[in-house]
Each structure stands twice: as C-alpha cells, then as structure tokens.
Length: 183
Image (spheres, rainbow, N blue to C red):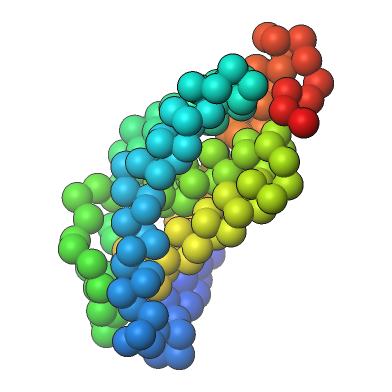
C-alpha cells in the first residue's frame, strides 16, 4: 500500500511538471514558495496582530498554532518519518529551487501556512481570512510545483496545520472565556 502511495505521489509530481509548469509562472511560484520560508510571512502577520489590543488574542492563537506546527511538523514528524525528498528519488523530476536541508514529510511550509491561515479565517473579518487561505493554498501548491514535496507531504501539512489552528482557537477562547474575539 505504501509503495502504491509513493508511486501515485511521484506520478502526480511528474504530471505537474509536464502539464502545469510554465516558464512565466515558475518565477512567481518560486517567490510564493519563499513566502513560506521559516514561516516568516505568518510570523510577521502574527506580530502585527499581537501589537493591536483588538487583535491580540488572534495573534496568540496564531502564535500557538505556529509553535505547534514547528514542533509537530519540523521537529517531531520530519525526523521520525525521515522521508527522502522527491527530487532525490523520482527519475526525471527537475528541482526548481535549491536542495532542502531537512526531510520531506510533512510539508512545514504548508503546515505553518494552514496553522496561521485557518486561525485568521476563523477569527478575522472574512476578507482577511479568505486572503490568508488563498496565500496558504498557493504556498502549499508551490511546494509541489518546485518539486520539493510529495502531494501526501502537503496533504499532511494541511491536515496538521488545520488541526493545530482549531485547537489553538479553542484553547485561547477557553482561557479567555470568549466566543468571538474580533468582529
């Protein structure tokens, strides 16, 4: 079963490379993937939220979700699973960015993006939450586009990030004793 998953993952990446990579789009996708480096975009948004008293609790939620993502995705699972990056094992897959220094599973870029974006989507006015989700989806897709993650890595990042976001929202609300923190 695992062998089939790896085969399907590889075939999807080769299909993306063959049919969805375009020279004009490649530089944009590299820029989008770089937005997720070290979670910097989401950390900066979280800091801005923490600075304003009106959004501080949302900042706490995002910070908690991001810390959870760092621990679960990058410290625990990447090292436990130790999955080789797809560009190292899939014949014909062309890497579009520099080689990555850590393991593949799960996608840390995707995990942190969804950890923060789901918090923003749930707790901020819709227009901000929808923009955050769009950016998170683009970052997740960019990891496939540039060839550094398998689709199952990205899917795991989405699930883990979402769960951590929901737990963080629940926990901060529980601590604060509030239902909706920002109108």
